[in-house]
Length: 210
Image 1 (cartoon, rainbow, N blue to C red):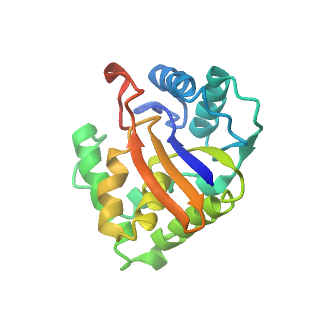
Image 2: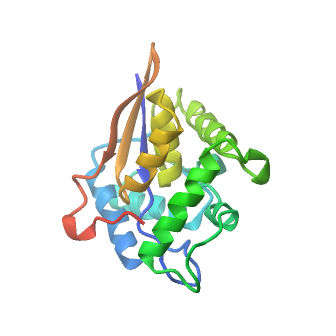
């Protein structure tokens, strides 16, 4: 029986010129999850093409002492949240604060997942979900795989394995903790979700969601 562990990246740089950079908290989170998984002997370590995913993988692998190769697979990239937001009119003016941004992001996510506007996006929600599932399917024969990805792909994979709809995705995606672990096993029955968003290893003062 094989297993795939989906690890969300460490905290990125909210409010900075380049969001796709781990914050200092994000770097510490990456080292924490690596130490928590040090007893694991993965056959392959995969990360998306985004810098925050790559850097989390590198820091975690070093902290864990893994010798498995690090493999880039862009199918584990997050959705294009900027394009998603661009298609959702904002109710605030100027630069949003965290509360305003969250409301805007949730409305944009609802629009993207509704299925009513798929032709207005370069990557619709169904296309996003299918590329994530293709990335997951590629690992079913990999033994033990650890994937460093983002909250959207984690929620998309979990939702499909639970045979749940988009409403469940919308509820799950925002609660995926940075460097949490979601476990999937591959056996004779196919893929099964055995846990979602494990984050007991993350100290309370390091728990973040963005």
